[in-house]
Amino acid sequence: MAAYFLTPIYTSSKIGQLISERIKGPLVAAFRSPLMKTLDRSVEMEPATGFAVIPYKQGVTEPIKRILNSHNVKVAQKPFQTLGHIFAKPKDPVTKEQRTDAIYSIPCNDCDNEYIGQTKRQFGTRLKEHQKAVFLGKKENSALSEHTCLTNHTIGWDNSKIITTNRRYHQRLRLEAWHINSAHAPLNRDDGGLLPDAYLHLVRKKGR
Image (cartoon, rainbow, N blue to C red; front, side, top):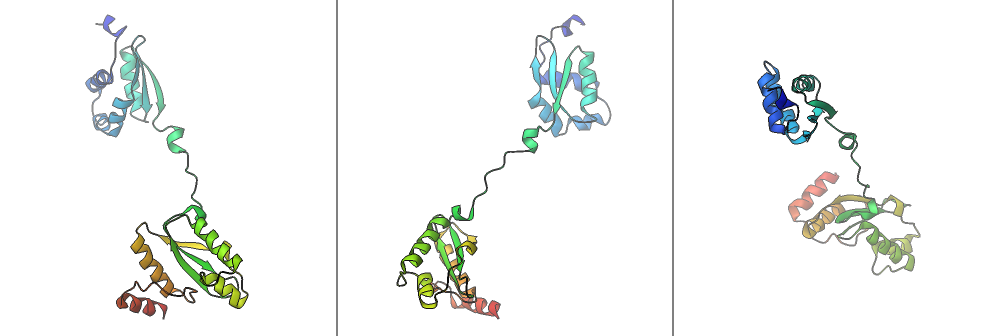
């Protein structure tokens, strides 16, 4: 019997069997925990040397190691969580200009007026279109341009913001209309007429 353990071919199930034969008392419950499943997936063997690598869990790994050592299986321990799990590589944050499907606000620098709009494209692309219209003085096509031409005010491009986002076109239009009607001094020439009277009543009640 002793010779059998000198050059064994150990599988995770065999290790589990050896452990189960020796573990008594409260440790039985511990081995029925998720750690046992992790052990079953994580055991790495080198059959020629009787060597095992198991995840470390204080109070549980130590008796496992003693049991395996008694069967001439050398044990190495590895962290239950690696640094890669703890410090996962963060994703690059999405900038305001890169966001899509947005309802947005562009304020005036010199008064309380603001323009509310919506776009499916990246907000930065739509913002550049507004800036171009103001620069060229195209007031017939741009409420922002009309405002600057009539008042000589400047637009607060840097203070523009994303109010909310929604991927569905018709829902974006309704949200845009809601925020136009909710704004203190909107520059928009119309609200799209998409809000039922009941909703308009709620908006006006909220603004009081």
